[in-house]
Image 1 (cartoon, rainbow, N blue to C red):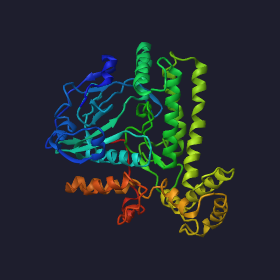
Image 2: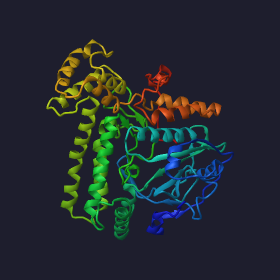
Image 3: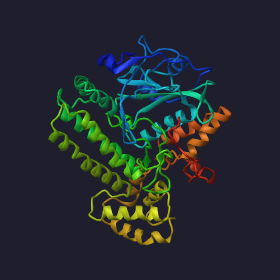
Image 4: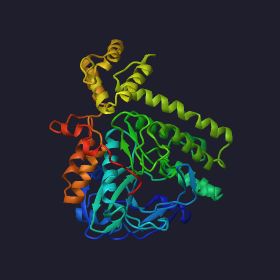
Amino acid sequence: MKNSLKFKDLGVDFFAHIQTQKLENSSLIHVNESLRQDLNFNIPDKELLEICSGEKQLGQENPISTVYAGHQFGYFVPQLGDGRSCLIGELEGNELSLKGAGTSPFSRGADGRAVLRSSIREYLCSIAMQGLNIPTTKALAIVNSTSEVYREHVENAAVVTRVAESHIRFGHFEYFSSLGQNENVKKLADFVIQHYMPEVKQGDYLGLLREVIQSTAIMIARWQAQGFSHGVMNTDNMSILGLTIDYGPFSFMETYDPNFICNHSDTQGRYSFERQPSVALWNLHRLADALKTLLEEEELKEALSMYEKILVKEYSTLMRNKFGFSVQDESDNSLINNFLELLYTHKKDYHQSIRQLSNSDEHSLGEVFDPWFKDYRKRLKKEKVDLNQRHNLMNEVNPKYILRNYLAEVAIRKAEDLNEYVEIDTLFKLLRDPFDKHEGYELYDSETPEWAQNLELSCSS
């Protein structure tokens, strides 16, 4: 079992050693056993609890919290950093990060804790994203406790163990660039190339930027195709490896609305669903600014011009697959867009409506959709696969189960009020394989009930 963190090789300018803070009456409420096996983390549950709660170190080295900057809602903040998370070691080439394990020099007066509700949401969403084939940090375990933290009201403190090849963000580069520490920018770029970009030659900083642009564009395209809204796309929440990171007030869109805003703190709609692709490009420009001492201006422009082409190609492919189009036709984009416009106008559920397309002869969307279905059936005649094959292929890309906010809320309430965690386990099983029918669980495919229609999500966690 290897613990040594590669990140420490960068030197003390990049991190601070910290001491995790013990939780009262900690308990392990769920473990991602398949990830545990992938990590070869073969230790007794008691020891796993001690490590995942921050009570015991993984190996001999102290945990570290890293320093970074970031643009938050468009405004530059010169120092942020891991205010409540820390890297505790590596297993099988993956960093383990505890979120909620206590304060660090970068906590900025906060308590360094995470609450149970946000920890459950992050844990389940990382499972859901992996099931949907969207690049993401992973989650190994959730620890609950009786330690109290104060948000809008008193809540239980919890810790979620996150796993990723690297947790480096755009903001790490921005921090050193803003200080004029160009050698540290270069040092970090060399580190990323050496350890995480085997296809890029050492010193090829244009290659590094292109890799980040490509992985970011692919991630965003998959967000859009699966109706995922992040909510807080600050540059400090953008992974250098194109992973979805830092799950806060996220939401999977239910009723189709391109103007959907999942974070009620986002009063200007900066991070609305339809703006996510352009915000990601804006964030990539900020990363390019941080790399300007390593690249010529024309190289930066050339690399950034790749983004839209990659995004559109990936998104178009994903959407054609969702609609059952195995061959490309010039009518595809207009047909898809017309369907989305109908969903928006008539307030239909995005995921359930598209899942219905696998049976084009029957639908329950209403007569207003009949003319569109006539055009759709005409288009399908150009396909070379038979009906059953198309049905199966479409159901492999259109999820039956998504993490609807009310499902997460039910699991959270049972955990908070009853110390009951069966609902977390049920959602875990459904979300890790969201395309399967899971006979007997049809209730979890239901639209949001009336009591949960106005659930509000914010950055509070």
